[in-house]
Length: 184
Image (cartoon, rainbow, N blue to C red; front, side):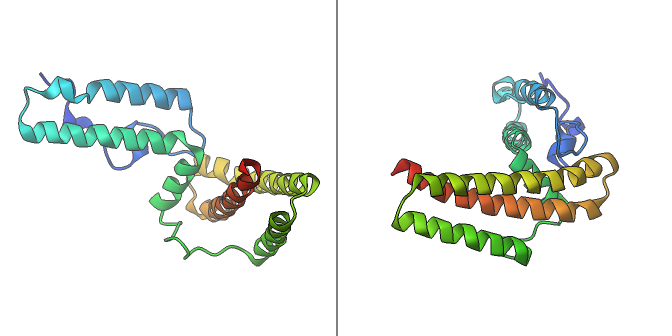
């Protein structure tokens, strides 16, 4: 007994799979509800009487369901997914950051090198605050573009989102380095 018609499932992209509007700002409760509904309907145990090819299809869809949910529930993964869907995000190392940002990061990295040589809690706190201030400013710049894209799907807005994504990713690497000071 088939619980769902597999022909009705759209796998064009993760958003269409869940019958959701492509968006940077998702209702995570709704996403979770749709994920659990799909999980129940695509559970392999319900298809043990089906042909081997049908069982493989269910396993593939079940894995797709998990991948889709894990991507869309995480704001960074969702942002990356949208940028890749529209061919805005290139391969690692092919995207360029603006020089002003890189100069700012060079100053922060110099501060990190000083901390490595001679740890000082005040300097550490200053670097943390500097990074948080940059993140806040970056988000406020990108938020408008993301909300506008969600409304009108104007792909030209994604260039601002790309810059935000790349800069945020860069800052996350710096934060990971800062975590080493806490663990030490």
